Length: 190
Image 1: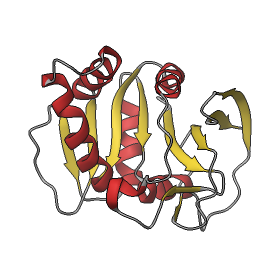
Image 2: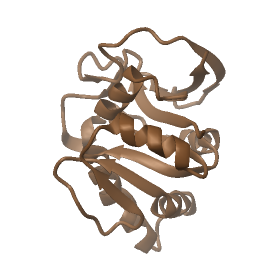
Image 3: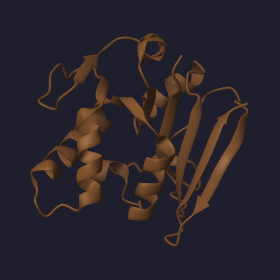
């Protein structure tokens, strides 16, 4: 059975998005190419990407043009190509089709689809952003690894990444600190 890895950026008070929908609720986010590279390495070899509808729309708008942009940095082109080539499972009630390659839409129960995917996937699975989907999968105990990029800001309000669930015990795999003040913390289920 394949592992489901969750990668998300959070504020130190546990929010993954601000109430401000502009910039996908990431107005407090501190970009750092070193963090991007490290998160990419920690994620490992992945074949399937799981996204909620809002995260998917942002990714599609952000990443697909990079492949056509000759001025885009090489590391961003590499990530854009990997995302394009990955199988993408998108949970959305409204979207049914896309021009981004390898994308499938589902409007059913995410837990059922994830269980099936963990059984049939040829490599590990990653969920990015997609807070409401993450919360559902945490409640169902389907996430095997938690990779958090902690931004050194107290957001004060916003959308919490984890809420309304029972405690889940984790073991720390690694932490990495960066000059930008960001931290990556990587946990696995105990």
